[in-house]
Amino acid sequence: MGTLIRKTRSVCPVCLQNIPAGLFREDGGRIVMRKNCPEHGEFSVPVWHGKADFDTWLLETPPLLENRGLGCPGNCGICPEHEIGSCCVLLEVTGRCDLHCRFCFAHGGERTDEPSLDELKAAVRDIVSKCGDPLLQLSGGEPTQRDDLDELVRFAKEAGCSYVQLNTNGIRLAKEPDYAKRLVDAGLDIVFLQFDGMRNDIYESLRGAPLFEVKKEAIRVCGDLRVGVTLVPTVVRGVNDGELGAIISFACEMSPYVRGIHFQPVSYFGRCPGMPEDADRYTLDELMADISEQAGIAITSFMPSRCDHPLCGFHANFLIEPGGELRALSSISHSSAIRGCERDNREYVARHWMRAPDEPKPVSVFEEEMDFDTFLYRLRHECLTLSAMAFQDAGNLNIERLHRCSLHVYETGRIMPFCAKYLTPYT
Image (cartoon, rainbow, N blue to C red; front, side, top):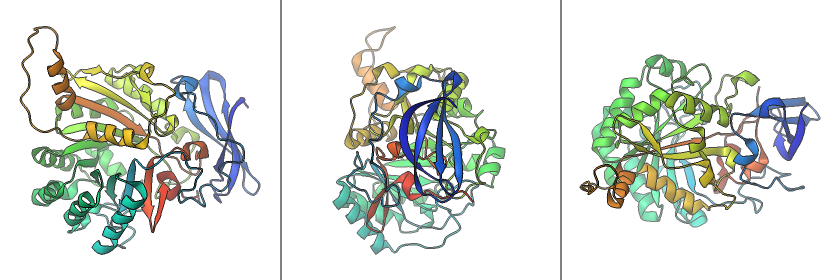
């Protein structure tokens, strides 16, 4: 049974009723969430496999207080119990998509609904009024299905959004460089590029088409336009969990076009193959351990978030050395229980994912060591950021985590945590 180490709340994965839950420590450091729905029975799901020390990773995060989160996520909007503001706000600009991916939180391609440009501008104004100056992520569906997307990018920057990020499969960017240029000229800051591996069979399995060459061309187009690219792999056990080192090596080769990699361990919400088995689950600490083994990176290089809940993700920064080796600039020992805010998080993202302006590289006066000016130049131009977001689904939803979410979604006047917005029951 294990030892109860933390009480929280979750939902029944069948009916989504809010129910008590607990985290239990088993042999070997494995952490399991257990919960019991009065109607549908008991459920158990692994959330940590002991590849890193769970207690250290939590950064002394306090547990969910008693009688908190009783209405989550059904009354989400956001309520006063929410503990953090908006770092990034996602805005769906279309339901259309040119792919039909095996996993898709937004059921892309199954819908043809599309707000008008005026409706989207009104939504942007509302987002700015509610959230200040957020990083705005344009998503879908596939947002590049819209011909007027550049107008929306320009409006968002003028309305007060600090940064604008495009969440895309990259197909249209690769095929229509002029379209990509329109977006960049309008003020696009970051391209968040779906990128699952280095082989076409991976894309055929997850996306239904051989897309590797298309992805490379999209990166080239964006690089020539000097807009930062972050690769976004959805990591599925048995499909591409053995590709992590190869993706990192590729990103180093494509620097400075590629600024970072944002790994997303697969979650079972939206369109997905069905209720997962425990063996299908791919936890955050397993991801860190596999990256460490495949890329030769010390697992201590990864740091938990000090803005979102520590169990939501990690980040790590590296200098790219000649030959593609990575020199760690971060360590879990740098983390502390002091909480950052959504603005700090947003500026961190922008600093590491955007392309820096052109500048001459300083000539170091030292033959064997960098001087300070050279080090700063390399931070701006020869750095790779690895990060991850472990989204929650109805099986492993932890309301303690939900209360510290800074990745929000705009929906008809409401600002909602991402994992609350896209939560779907198992059928």
